[in-house]
Image (cartoon, rainbow, N blue to C red; front, side):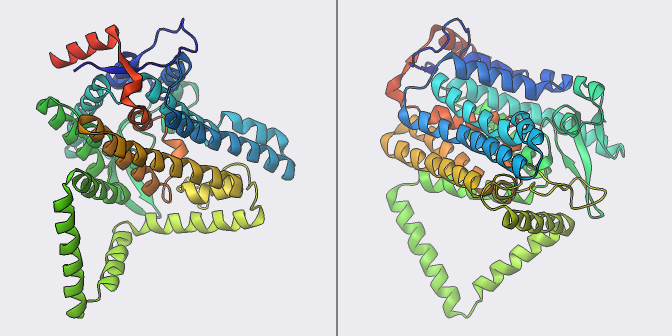
Length: 444
């Protein structure tokens, strides 16, 4: 089957960029990561692809623009907050912060994904190979743990040599396979790889697993899914593990026939009736499970609750446009800034109601557009839309507990795939370059 690219009008025809450029970037992730330049390269590739051409589908355009608008509204809120806090210069500086650029890059990734068909065969193959890279790095990490190494980090990348004390350089420019993570005295060893933090690895692993489901070659499908599952499990992210289970249930549900869905519904209702008659306190059991989950890493849960409390207090003092940017850490030794670790509380703190409203519109429009595409497609294309919906629901699931703006670039393939799945099939055409790359992909 031929790879597909959008038949949209070029914005800058002289830019030579297509689906193969993005797939190539994914294949050479380790090289860019080793140099500490992966985030920069991702930003450049996405920007070039976005400015090469525009998607034809109105839904894809609307979704991409809605995500870009989150960053624009956050920038406006930062300027207003800077004036209110008598720090106007700090407000304008936020234009180059992840709190603004992160949202814009997410929108551009969706735009580029729709324009260039980044849910196509060559990108799916590249994501599967990325899963294989995760497997190799995880094996190296296992050797390091068996040797008793507390961490496996090589700080000699270009960003770390230039700005060794920069938090951004440490998060996005360091070379780390696994790290010990301590939260209020609680220690655990977690994989991190080419992501800024471990929960981002978990989200990235979910993306790799779901996208690899669409790989036609069984070998590469197993490679990608295994790597994705390893990323989720050994990130030790409770949020990622829960989201993965929900995605698995969602995939089975959306792939099942109408008869099987009815059987599942009646079975669930019967089971609920039976346990109610038996006097089983299922709401209490669910609360107990939640308490046990929180108790697995009690220090992390305590830190989050403290951040959320301080973020809410800050929002109440400036509810319209917020405080403009991330606040100080709630802990004297650990990096736990106010307005972090949650998209919901973070946007309320940094951008107020106006910025949170723009996010709600963007995520709602993404899900609604996915549902509309689901009813219009069939066969393999419908499977793409199912994965797109599950990825979008995963972002919604993560938004309460993680700052999505900080992972749009590390997990750019998720946003690019969302855009690619939103573009209607009838508005795509084959490209000689992509056909050649697809043919190479079938004969590794």
